[in-house]
Length: 392
Ligand code: FAS
Ligand code: PHB
Image (cartoon, rainbow, N blue to C red; front, side, top):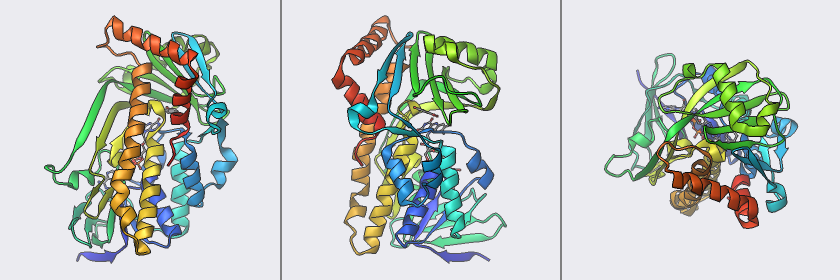
């Protein structure tokens, strides 16, 4: 027997955007129901982003979830770019007045999830078969099977597609209406998490003739390292001796202080830029990776997702108060900011990686851009104001 449940906002996905949206809506007095494809353990096991913009920290405060963040955060006043061993230290705080915050996405997800569970937020875990319907009506529905096998029909006022790039929400928009833009990069990132101290006080982005490397951290004792990998490679193609050799070489002099540790996590992620213009379709609103993907070079994916749901929560709260205008403006306003951040992520990815299809001229252009940044306050200001986060 199918069970019918009423909710104001049906949220697909218990990742950072879905959980943040539910928490912000709660603070606005609006109920929601979350449907998540995976298990609670799987969601909490994901190791992804590490650098937070000021807007993401503000959102955690608005959500009432910033206690651990404030206790454990690391503030970075700068970022380091390295090119064939030459480094530029960009003083982002001195330039913009803002710093960035190092605090892992895994912790963000945990803090939000615990706050949702503490107040009894309905979350249906292990529910992979959600199907969306009546999106053009005022009462859209989500039909799914709960973990115990009960068929459920969720009757909502809005559906929030926070189910990531491979979710069902964007795919529920008629294909003849979807407008999308995509660039797949000819490389991925092989990442490891090690319990060894970071090699520098700030995040290091390095371009070397043999490929990109990134040195980040999660705490004073835990580091997050990445190297550019080739298409089709898996973690098995990167035994640790190969990883350490490439990582240290690509970092130049900074690589000399690397302490090789046994990884507590290792994974490979493909890189792509993607945007759908359809961040709204009837009563379906897309947010986060469901609507757009950026290469992680600019540390923007998570921060963009949080900015979307911050905007969406405010729009639904305005609707609840009788003002529908913010909702009608959601997609246009969100996309205006998304495209600027897509540009920055593409720019930094293009500058800092080795492209097999690049001619010697394009390689010279990378070197010339790097030398210009080293010598130009204007160029460093562009990078700094994007890195700390554009105005919301
Ligand atoms: P998410 O993908 O995090 O969450 C979507 C949720 O929806 C998941 O829990 C999923 O299980 C669920 N879901 C999917 N389909 C569903 C369905 N049909 N029904 C119900 N639930 C469904 N960003 C950075 O800034 N820096 C990084 O270093 C970085 N590294 C990354 C590495 C990888 C491998 C990936 C995939 C992304 C990385 N990102 C990084 C980007 C990442 O942080 C995302 O921007 C961020 O997780 C976006 O959050 P959400 O929009 O919530 O999507
Ligand atoms: C990370 O710490 O995982 C990280 C930092 C900066 C990036 C991407 C990932 O650009």
